[in-house]
Image (tube, rainbow, N blue to C red; front, top):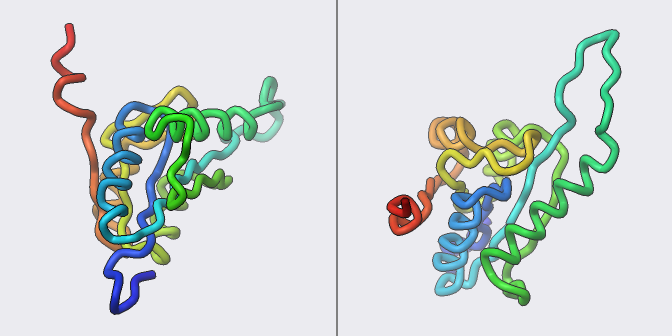
Length: 152
């Protein structure tokens, strides 16, 4: 958490691999650098819910794939050299509840708007609206740059 000298020491970024979440990483880094803050690039994942009597098929490698998506998002945002103040972490848990809980120890949370990355267990979309209402610190919701929206 912040100190008297540094108002923002920890900026938490929810990452799901989508373009908005990659842009959230970039924006968090733009804020973090002049403040000397850490950027906590975090992907939250969980196994899909299953009902009693049903066997889940094809879930092996689920956590590994989530880690790959996180690594790819960090590389896309920053290139081959991850900045020294960026820490990537993969956490098992539902994104909405986990980010809200993690916001207790953050000075700011940055998420992309309407994420829905390439991985069903790592959804960020309605998550951003839940964070705006329930986070324990300021929340920045980022859009992808306008140039990306105007491509036809």
